[in-house]
Amino acid sequence: MKPLIDFQNKFQRILASIILLSLISFLSSCLKDSREDLSKSPALVGFLFPNPGFYPAQGGYLQSAPLGISSTPQTLVYDSTEAYPAGNDAPLEIELSYTSFPAPYSTAVTVTVGVDDSLVSVINDVAGTDFIMLPAGSYTLPDNGQVTIQPAKAGQYPIAVVSPQVNTSMLDASKNYILPLKITSAPAGITIATNLNEAAMQVILK
Image 1 (cartoon, rainbow, N blue to C red):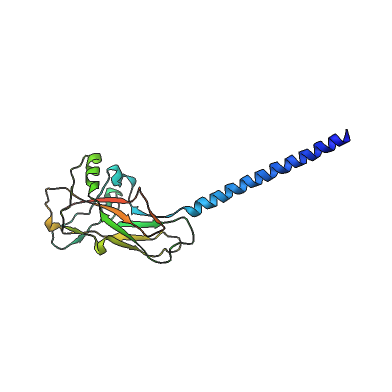
Image 2: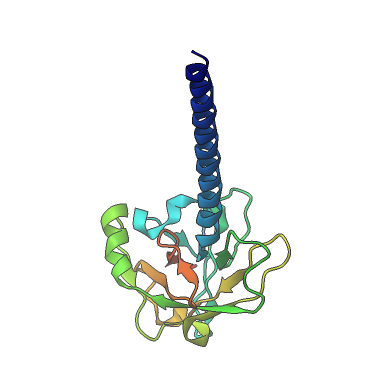
């Protein structure tokens, strides 16, 4: 009878060891997967908006601060009172965000912003508006749309300003103009956020 008892005790110890080793292996895998997922999270670049209702994909758009009629190009900034009752007029911005620390980019990063007139019909269909594209020659994007984001500072994601210029003397005050923008390229290793890659601004004339 003693050999049977010894065998049972030995079997139980082996089984307990197997269960313990399996549990340790499982927990280690979970920790490893978590770290790997985090390390694979890419740096993201996208427009900054006052709130999600302004995303062009949802038919949203920003309104510019009122512009006077002038042949001198004027910088488009959005009327932030549309988003915040006590807001001040603010520039359109792009943010570079990331999950790895310290900041993965110690040098400046340049992304390209272009004009995407296909957004005009998307916004009109969703929002029920009658916007038209700004006429050719009435707007420019400085540096051919290249926007340079300076290196990150401790505890902050780096932000750059997008500064479209508009010659309002070429516009008809009876029409509703809009400038639709899209982030078109970013350096290798940086992902363009697909839910933050578009921005559109209605040009408001005084």
